[in-house]
Image (cartoon, rainbow, N blue to C red; front, top):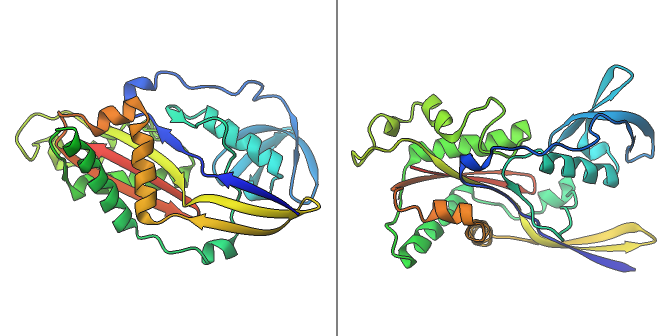
Length: 274
């Protein structure tokens, strides 16, 4: 019997929109390749598009939409790399394995996550960092948090990971669309021209111990994270990135909104600073 241990993987979006001047393209995107599903059936087709939940394949002028979960492990790996490489501002540390897919049964047995507690803890840790480094603490504004939450949900639903959504809207554009009152008159009366933003995506667990026999999985032990553990992981990821850390400690910002969205084993987080 063999044991494998999968470590948690991070994705963080750079905090300054000016860093998103280029987008990586996957070489050979228009070339056909063999795709295999979990039942071993093979099709030779071109990858036209993909999200976290589905792929669109093209063969002889016809398009096929397939759930990502139906593809073989190797093809899911290929699709994940395709999604990562086309995301502006996405950071993925090297040398880590991708998340194994969790089953509905495993998720049903997982501990409950309080989104409210997680958001509050991320907010508190942000201010603890600022206070430690002699930077004025931020005030939480629920109006900003609603905008941040909407972006976290949108990233999951539409399958992107970026500050600019598929409609081309920046954080400030989204605030304007939501008629955020601070753009017309900031709470302290000081001129504030727009949002800066941190985004991140982490897994709900730290690791999985997977036992196999003859290349067949016979058991898995999942090490779940609490709200505090998740918040610390998120803030550490932001601190380790100069662009994110600059946003966290920007003395020109006085207000913040934190928006978290949990979907299956994934946690999406958006911080908007104003």
